[in-house]
Length: 473
Image (tube, rainbow, N blue to C red; front, side, top):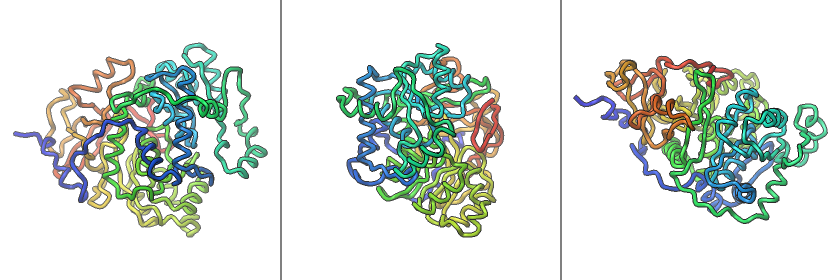
């Protein structure tokens, strides 16, 4: 008797035109940026506090970061950390690191000193791009001598503000809120590093889809984060799968980039996806600043808004939204992740925007989405949806890890496909536990119904949700 999962019943439930599989080209992730800059050089890539950065400018800035790194001895396979919230400098640093042949590591700005030290020591990065607000904590960790950090590039949140806001921020907030950093000898400002990079030759490096692009740190019940190894190919594959799931027009879409880029979910769905279709990212530095978020929707009218239930719910209950103060009817497609989406949240948000909000599911180890409910087709209450193109899924017996469970019965969710990580950085035992015969063991207890919709029923691993985001003790 064949396995119910081998038959992939979910494919029949896909929206019209979505393929079961997609060919994954062998190009690096930054190909998306170079292609968008080539086709739409003057199109707006980023809007931040009203300041616009074109695709041509973004591509040139990332080239300068890559050249600056190479001029400082940075080689293919070297690691560099980005320690900042959602700001243009994150995007610039990220693609610059990749263009230099490097491996990017995004650090959560909310990390404690201990967590930061562990991540820096574990990945072995010598280079850190840091927001001035976090400079002091980084230097405290660096001075302890347990990391290899020797090159620190410091940026200020105001650097890509429009001129009038920059002046106001300098006068009223910079010192008061801790953004003014006195740099220690040897450290560089972001703008000086860019200026140096603009004078330096382009790095002589070849990057393919099979090179490592990312170490994305995930929580664990031990309390110490593990670095999931992501190839350029894995991130390209997930981006192309997302492209099939949502209707879009090249060079025409606005994305509300409110979820953190330092989480792989925000990194792929808000940053990389937008760049892959020459979309405009409206970057929100603090998603809890409802006024900024709603004013940005009202002013720039984005169509695509990836988020988390807490974010959608905050909009649903905002009295100014109820009073009609903001026009949020431009929002057309939203995928919610990171926590279960209540049906009331979905219905209310769809009523307010006229758009579609669907629940999805993914993991750090799969470089975001593995499942999503259809945008046009049926959304089943409590379901994480259907496996997206190129994703294979099974529900297996928790005890033996190999026997397929019947339809409707719970077991461990295991996943296979081009987006799955290569393993955990320098952790062979944990890698062997998580990856078996090409299958990623998720640690989530789930079931599949007869139509191929999946449901998370329990967690095999301990987890806490704080502020709408999954974290581990």
